[in-house]
Length: 327
Image 1 (tube, helix red, strand yellow):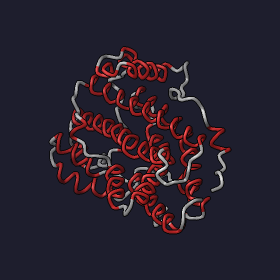
Image 2: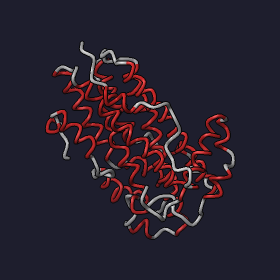
Image 3: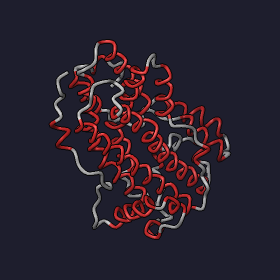
Image 4: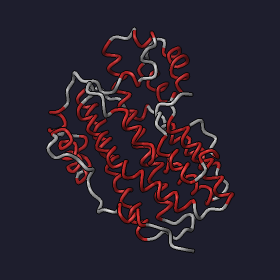
């Protein structure tokens, strides 16, 4: 088997490092300091982080209200401000959990299937090193989002337990697709497909929260830091898929393309199950009506509108029209 062209991958290699940040920007620097302290002593994420706590502004929104799927519904508008604030905080907790779940249960297992050569392509050392570096990055991202949720709970004085929330829509779809795979090889292809969708599209998901000046500074900085890394990971994931795709036969390609389509639908869509759990836990008056009329309707729409990265990749491979997707 000919060695794949890894020139572009080699150019991306770098030692594992903290997320890129602007040291002159106080909020970004504080997020990084909290991250490095927490990394060495895990329990400190449960304690007060002075820099982050001092930057918390109780008058800023935890989450953009416009992204709450029922923000225009009369049942939501009738709530007092405290209840709406709790729902915004819940939205931020759920957002972080979604990111963490995708990193832990979709992306890194997919990357691990590459480093473990589950598809038998004999990955070059350069490719394995690049993937391992990305896996280290994902652990940092997980900790950043965990810290951000912990800060919100601590400063708002609300428990907001993640145990209330179901696995995210992408994780559920990934789990189901893996379970349907007819062989270990098909399972590895499914994992690769979902990882590719996540890594090429997550920057668009993170971008939903980076431009709103009304948001908590720490929340915006956390998302912005993560997004910078993911813009690099997008290129890595795209190169990885191209290398693997070139080695696949017709049957394997069909498995991969079907899984890509499943991943796109899951990743870009809304999550009625998560919102139903939040509304029920909060005992929102008219909650069932709220879910039935607003959240369930939003399930069929897209939260993430920008699929340009994965679409460009599929176009480059000549398979964009073979995916059963309404681009």
